[in-house]
Amino acid sequence: MLDSLMTKSNSDTAEKLPARRFREMIRVLRNRELMHGVTPEKIRQILEDLGPTFVKLGQIMSMRSDFLPQEYCDALTTLQADVRPMPFETVLSIVEREYKCPWQKKFASISPEVLGSASIAQVHRAVLATGEEVVVKVQRPGIYAVMEQDIVLLKRAAALTQVVGAERGVLDISMLLDEMWRIAKQEMDFLMEADHIDEFRQLNAGEEYVDCPQVFHHLTTSQILVMEYVDGIRFDDSAGLRAKGFDINQLGRRLAENYVKQMIEDGYFHADPHPGNIRVRDGKIVWIDLGMMGRISNRDRRAIRKAFFSLANHDTMEMKAAVLALGVPQKRVDHTRLYEDIDAMMTTYGDLDFGTFQMGTLTRDIMDVLRRHRIGIGPGLSMFARGVLTIEGVMRNYCPDVNFVEIFARSIQLNLQKDFNWRVELDRLKSEGYVFFKKTMRLPEQISDILQMTMRGQTKVNLELTGSEEPLRRIDGMINKLVLGLIGSALLLGSSVICMTQMTPKIMEIPLLGVFGYLAALVLCGRLLWDIIRNS
Image (cartoon, rainbow, N blue to C red; front, side):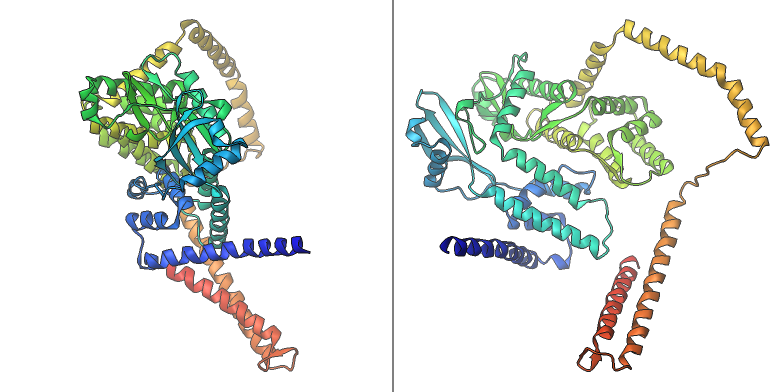
């Protein structure tokens, strides 16, 4: 009996939690005066007020310049994930719960001082029972349930906007939420982060000046990550680096070369390369916090190389092909407008000068073209764009004499030379030449077949008028509004006729069926007025 009462109580509490959380969201939106207009800074403040789920959502949105205007992405990149630290006693209890033994059996000491406190986890310095200095990353209790609840509420809100007729603009909320939840679940699984570190270490094993922390797998669980403590100097601590005798420009070149290698050669790169995640230890670049990693397929890497060489050769048609290869159109592509936009973008660069050219600017411009033409991209490319913008900013701020674009271009050129094989190319040319010869020999026969079909009236021609989509869409919208108006009028007249009868049951002397008809007419007319006002 007691168990059933407790189960019912927990169920009631679970049902009340979404409602309570929803009221909290409404209060934040009201306090920030959302109805008085939206600005990039206001969006950032709202997301910070709403808590860890929304901070993470904002961080993901900041990488999607194919969805959002650049000023919004810039504002969201400043989102702070720092939150109030957990009590040290809570940290110890989580450690003991995961290891199922007193923490002293695994560690000689755990420092109460917090090295970092974010929305998902908290980091402390420690010493193992065997003497190694480590850092312990401990996941906040219940964070998975909290974020999952927020995602459910956000998805309900997104579905509601579609029900009431809001059109999908450049921002597909449902797709963005799915992407955010996928990335957040990866970050909340520390076994996956450990695998990321191992893969990164393996891919960079041959790099003399690159390193990452060693993972202690026997102490790592899904909620606790134990890694080697990196006693290095932050990359943005220029004074500290000079005091140790390091050459800032040399370190910058090594950093840029390795990051380009990660993107172009490995297709597996650090997705958040800000200075806080880069340390210098014994002259080596040490990458830390590898929870968020990006992947780029071979196909996308080829498209990126094609885009870069198209810009160098001012080949608009090849750049258009590269842009289309980078994304998936969400609607019919207007190829004429796409060509014109890309040609205008190419014209702004003029002569390609590596001394003044910024790779991040090109990436941003391509993303703007993708956004305008509703061409979606995968998370790997959005992370690539964010990574390029971030690492180029690091170069510009802390080692301005290092030209990231030159390093990027040289890496692409060397990559092409390394992949080039005369024997393979000759075999490919012979194969393509043979296919071309066979098709050419069949051309007269095909032309004769077409002429005979035309003379018999069997030829069909599909005609597509470029630019006709928008007028057709407007006509379709006008017809929909006309139908809504007719249905609303019919419901209003029909309900009025019903009210003149003695039909039962009644509400306030009005037949119930007539009340439903009036309500339906009111909803349809309200929808019609809203569409008219919104599009006026």
